[in-house]
Picture (cartoon, helix red, strand yellow):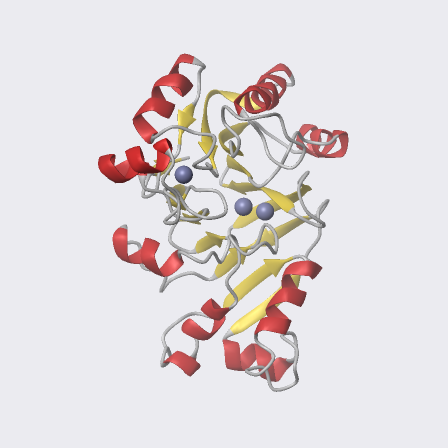
Length: 282
Ligand SMILES: [Zn+2]
Ligand SMILES: [Zn+2]
Ligand SMILES: [Zn+2]
């Protein structure tokens, strides 16, 4: 799988346009990998994780058009991961007639938020009616955590995040290679560990929440110490392949330094830091 990070920031982007803290000022002056858009990722050009608010900018900046996406896995309904207006942007409403039908896998709260946002565009006031699905060029697949399902050539296991109601993490497998996409989340619950242990085969790459970096410990996100604790347990349980790569993801400006400084720290502690536009072969 070719995994491209389209955005790697926490909720408001990094630098936060409204902020003059030291981290934001340094990121502005450094540019490049220190500039982070809201989190989402693209796999093989056809599977999107999160219909996030910065997708248009990401596709332009990183030359990664989204005209071939056929599947989308939605982690949760928070605004920094879900912009329902994109359904219109890729439909005939915006003059797009070439996009494949999008199979959209999401939880009940995500679908409720989309239905409310698109009410005036969906003929029956809902997203799931055949007429609405046709108009928006989408097929809705409601999923919840604790399921394993086929998504085209991918086998996906949805695992409960420790974050928001019905928020999900995704273990994504294709041809024996596995990515664990794990944001947004705090320390994993025992049920999540049980599901990971039950999944077949080692994980080759992990993109894990690092929102609070050098900040306080949290229940709904991870700081650097909690991040390492999760990875240590993954290794202790034998979940990771010997050469697995672990990426810090979903980085907040108030708790993580600019990319070069964070990378130096992370390297010393045995992990990598994702950045916008990074493509990795998993
Ligand atoms: Zn988030
Ligand atoms: Zn700031
Ligand atoms: Zn969230």
